[in-house]
Every structure is written in C-alpha cells, then in structure tokens.
Image: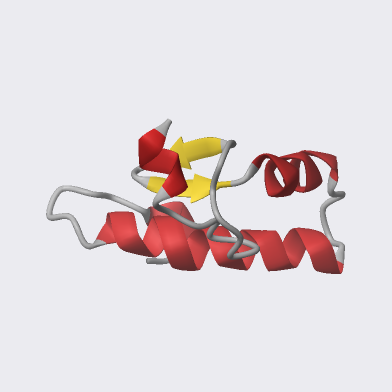
Amino acid sequence: MKYLNKQSCIICGKPLNDGIMINGRGICINCEKRIINSKTGTDFYDYYEKCIRRKIVHYMSKGEDFDCPDYHC
C-alpha cells in the first residue's frame, strides 16, 4: 500500500508499512499489538491513550460537526 509508506506511526514515529488507519492517521502493527495487550492504569496504556487523543481525537475535533464530550476536546 503506497499510502501507508508515506506516513509514520503516530505512536512510535517509525515508517508506517502496515497497521491500522484511523481518520487518515496510522498506527503500526507493533504499536497496535502493544495497545491491545496493555492493561488499563499502566504507564504504557496512559502513554498510548495520550498519543491517540493528541493525534487523532484532537485532529477530528477540528471538524465543525464533530462531538467529543467523552474526551474533553
């Protein structure tokens, strides 16, 4: 997928060769696995949550019709 190769992971910053895309932002397969296996309340979980909020939720909240009450955007 050429589209993925031009981006980097929003968590680790490495080139995005595989993984998931959320609203045009990518998370590599390694970070995706770490997120899935993280337990809530750990430093890793908190770090991933902050990255996602900062890079995806904040980005999405700039749209006019986006409602984000649970994330305090």
